[in-house]
Length: 238
Image: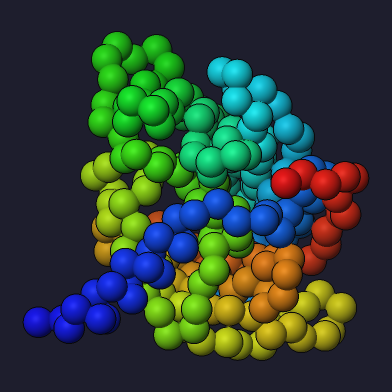
């Protein structure tokens, strides 16, 4: 049995992890990545804080991501757009499009935190969502703002499709990551696990918490995204 003081400490850490924080990103930030499968370059990707918008009356960030590449026979392109409330960091709308082999798979979701429901565009009915929902793109920015601690593990019930919860987040340590200019930067190494699949992320151990490297498990192997360029923010965004 876990002692009561330890349970209380874990509860406090989870509460802090879920609480809004001063954001280390703002409108105009664009991060560009090179994708590699082992030593071989297989594509490019980018993520951006595109703008601030009104989403159903709420002030919201618009995050976007896009990429293309893959090994021969698996060439794909994708894009995602996420609208996330700026006051309470909850997903409000999410769109994902995947193009492969001349086929396009596209899904759009309206997420309603107040009623703990979400809807899919063109599909009748509603589904249960957690009280503080996040989509996969919003989750990346959420981790940048969260007060992660080395050696700590967190169990989060926040992915908007409840069947993928809990999301297990483990901060495994601090590790140097090589940058495109030949320098290296100290990073927080983080593992994110859901349904037996683990993504790894390395966030710079500074105020900006830039995702300097990501390792994604894909059907053809683990692809590493390395930060190779960035555009500065135009103005404050939070």
